[in-house]
Length: 166
Image 1: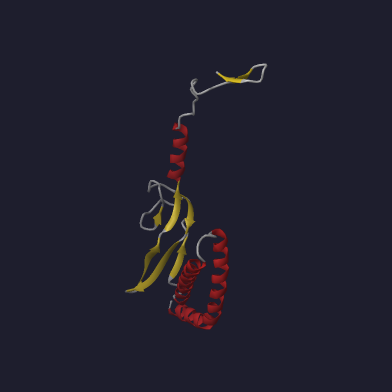
Image 2: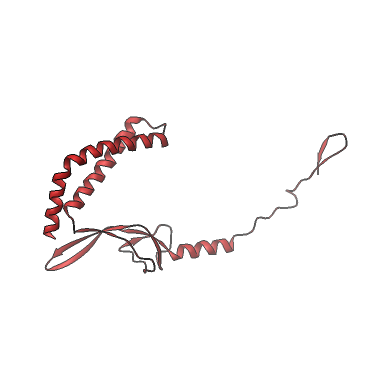
């Protein structure tokens, strides 16, 4: 692990100048795109937000590169049982099998007392089979739309062109 960390730190030092110029480019392009999507938002607010997001993302990448070998993305394999400690599923019953990993989690491995320990930094976002079961059940139990006889009106036109409703 120590060799990977040293390699990552060296890579960060070499790439520091390149990263800064790329950050400026990304900030400008992202600000342009957001301005098209949010034309009423003042340019100063968009620029500040974009700068904060890009700077934070660059720092995260640099940290993960320096700590290479300690941080790992965690994709959940479909068919795995849901585990609350490592996964989250919004608006669903938190039990059952994973159908799809929507967004990977981030885990950190650290060596402590001659053992490698794993820590969940960000939980994986998953969709569970129960979400599909609930949706199917809701479709089966929805009442069909009915139209009352009072709500239906027919229009007739007489020979003189006047319209009457019945």
